[in-house]
Image (cartoon, rainbow, N blue to C red; front, side, top):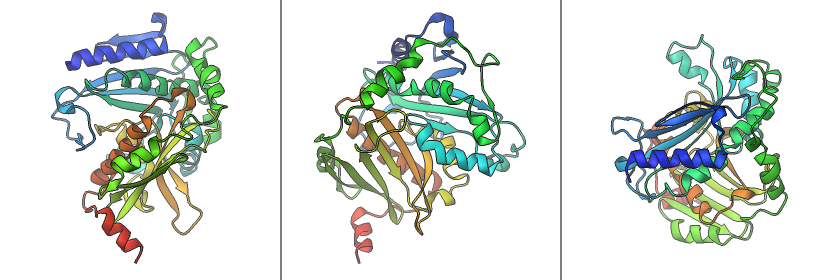
Length: 366
């Protein structure tokens, strides 16, 4: 399957899942479209892999076809706030604290002040955007665009719910309404959370009791690159990150405040990782949204306060609603978090050498 065929098929799947009405399209081309289902513009793009892209990271052993042949990156971006106050430490910290509640299937993206200062661009005005991405090839083109669209629909839904309230909460910014003011007439697809996700989330997590956690641990979690334990309640895995390890966990007993029960997948970096990367978790969100990583981004980086001497831990969280359950997602999401940990380590900490898991455990339990 050619890149052109993959892109065309993926865009058609997204349009179909969202039931996009032609009157709400604000432009469509061969590699994407803009859509206005409510007050905030949603931009969908399909970008083919380019060997000249210096940000490309090939993750060995992750399965699938070689993306250098026909890989495509799908992205969905929703413009949430204009003039986001990046110089306000209060606004930045509040957004970080609210991130696990605000976001579920997307990241909160704005340029970190440290990056702008280094680029001599800190005096401009900048948007706060919602962002999701997925990578597809001929092996994934059959199901991934459909699932990606189902996850990313939370962007315009949440933008409509929260965009007009955030400026007051953060002490700055303006709602990024495409037509100047908040629209009264909304596309029916924006009711999918209330009508489908929330009722399904009132039931027990569909992943609770799954044997996929233990199967993953046995299949992928017995090596020097990943050590994992799984049982019917969830999974814990560790992967090398320099002299320490990054922690990946799947939770079936942690509900989302908006969507109810489902599957929460988290990646925690070593506690000092965010401090060493200019811009902290804002930089992780910003650069992951702009790099070709081969790792789908269906969640958000934020910092989690441990309440101990370890301080704040940079964490990536993704929540999959009960309504979007499908077999094998556990394997996909955990492998994606393995890839995300590798991307962070190689991108932000290239000087580190990853130790083997056996070395890490021997040092830990001396």
